[in-house]
Length: 477
Image (cartoon, rainbow, N blue to C red):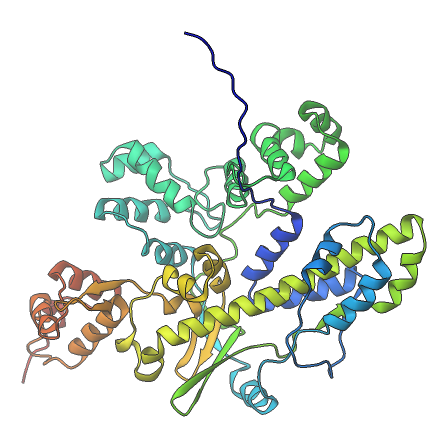
């Protein structure tokens, strides 16, 4: 058989995961309080960044594409011209609401309380949108129940398989589903796996992502973690055939990862939260605005232009700081824009819930909002992560606007949360001497064209901590 050697061209697309892109993703996920902290940290560390004047134009600022290209490439750029035009085109973050409304909210919402979400609740919410069988759901519950407060799995695959009376392969498959959930790194069995899971979430092992720093960080964590822990950087450079600068960038990426992904979740106690979004009713419409009260508006300090005409280290330093400032401001604007679009979409989908209550909540998944806004599902997930909205009905986590659905007899979708609320109302209005059985609730829902199994009613009832009818019965006198 003769060998046939041919030369062919192949066109592929690859996403280059730059540090700037990582920063933009991180900023998108930050809740308001952490965003404030990041901005204040940047103001303290980057002399080029400064607070903008309050009288800046309210029009939405835009960064031209050529300016972003200039911020990313330090060579052959007229940095003086860039700095002058940059400050003209990017005045600051604009206000999104009227001052009277802001003042009123400040008085009524500054001490909002909410119950913090536990890691178990956070993972369980995400798994509701996974296509798991009942057996897989039981395995997932066992896995989640064996996570410690830092998010690490404390039971072995073999132990969980024996407890659930299933194969180890099935447990491993369900564990991988949980490990793909937020927060990245959850469900790991040791530090190495925790860090690798987070790197994979950034594109490690993805053939469409081309990032030498990410690849090098993965190699260090996979095979040289003990060398890294000993801070033997020269050894890393020698073993991996990388320069000291390349190793330094990879180590910086690794140290930015979270070694304890579960520690940022609460224990269910009530705490103060700051809403990221406000929803106000005006007539029959709902207005969505961002909470930018007290959020520093940023710009580049124009006084640093004189350093750009100088050579040497001063010029390089200023160039680097301007690039960092440009991407920070751009990332914040992109976060605000994405969050506003997602919040507006959520309000559009769940307007009946805002008007009439939980009983009118409609089924909604990430894909619905992603298609409505024109972004990826993962972007929607990041945008709603740890964010809260203040509405006329109270304060909610944005992710509470998403709920799975049940199919009615006439083909319509009914939100699971809405069905739970109907069950709660039925039971609260029942005759205490003759409480409704689960089967009677099934029949009552069927009369409302909601097709639901008795075991589902029992599951919903138990999730609301409501006893079965035999234990709810009260003697009549």
